[in-house]
Amino acid sequence: MDVPAATAQSTGRWIAAGAVLLAVLASGALGLAWSTQQRVKALEVELVKRQQDSGSQATEARTLARQAEAVAREVAGRVSLLDARVAETSLQRSQFEELLQSLARSRDENILADIDSALRVALQQSAITGSADPLVTTLRQADERLARHNQPRLERVRRAVAQDLDRVRAAGTSDVGVLSLRIDELIRMVDDLPLVSQADRRVNRTPAATPAAVSAASAPAVAAAPAAASAADAASAPASQWGRLIGQRGQDLLAHVWGEVRSLVRVTRIDRPEAMLLAPEQAWFLRENLKLRLLNARLALLSRQFDTAQADLRDAQAALDRYFDRSARRVQQGSDLLKQVAADARAVTVPRPDATLAAIATAAAGR
Image (cartoon, rainbow, N blue to C red; front, top):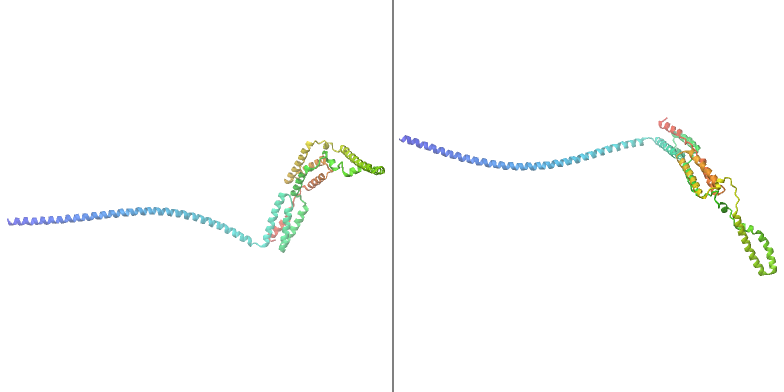
């Protein structure tokens, strides 16, 4: 009976020990679980914090990326501007090199190039204006420049310039500008030119009552006046004074009547009846037609149609001789001016300075 009791007691002890052990293990497990939970909570907090930090970093990264993109665009713009500047610098460098090359040429080559270009420009101006003055001026300037330079190598060019200058001067081309000014002067003179059919053209030139005419008309009365005056003086002094006064008034009246009678009748030689029969209202059309003829001649000269200009000038001269008073001074001046224009308006080709151009080419080639 003692053995079972001891066994039961030992068993109880083992159970108590196991219970204590289980309790310890349970409390350790609970502590471990609570510690693990705390660590999980800490990890969760750390994870949330890191997630928030990652979000802010991502936002900052996006902002930085945008800024980097803007900077990249700005850099690209600057690079394109630099490329343009580099291209411009390259162009300026090439131009500067060309300028250096042009400056590196000798002085003789520069003079020859300048004379050649000036001659070609003068040829174009002469072709446009129809005048040899631009070519003459350019050749004279080239001769003076070569004379100042005084190089034996360019002596042949100077002789060619002198030869072409003589040829151009001998050509005698017409100056269209001067001819146009003369035609304009003729157009302004047309309205003042007297017509043959004008009634007052003879009256203005030979007035009826002038002091010389009055004295000539009253010459017989003046010659008879001394005799009448001496007879009157013999009779009485007052009677002589009245007689002289009446005689003077009578002489003035006779001179005035004689002048009026002379102005009523005129004798004129008529070579062309149509000029005298020109109606006053047709005079305006005649003058305008003459102006149009002169304007057509001016336009023909400016367009280098010298045959057309000569035809219009001949028609204008014919109208001037037929319908206008050729004895008037202004008509004579207009006719002389028109003849000068017709004599100068002729087609003459301006000679080319071929000798000078050939000499310049030979000198530039070094032969």
